[in-house]
Length: 116
Image 1 (cartoon, helix red, strand yellow):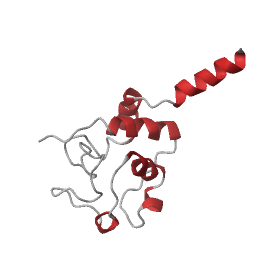
Image 2 (image 1 turned 30 degrees about the horizontal axis):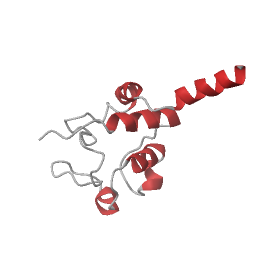
Image 3 (image 1 turned 60 degrees about the vertical axis):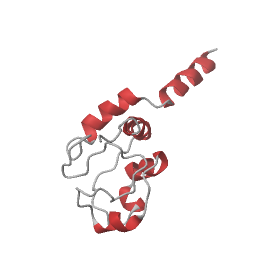
Image 4 (image 1 turned 120 degrees about the vertical axis):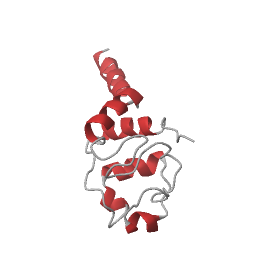
């Protein structure tokens, strides 16, 4: 019984949470990014499904422009794990070490639709 409860608790903790992602984003990403306004980093509205370095009103690093990477849930998780490993020469000097935090941030980012 105790093993089943531990397994269930672990399974619940591993599920993605948009609300936790919003909180992690605010704590770890918002010093350089926001949803709709560019800062040191690009705005994140509509990031899922967008090509890296493709925003017309933001000047990304040449490495991002050359990368041809499409931002999917998988590529965003890889980016947050180690941006330099995914795109050598890119300009972001931060990685999110917590795997659950990455899952949650990506779940949150997937909800951000680009404003028209």
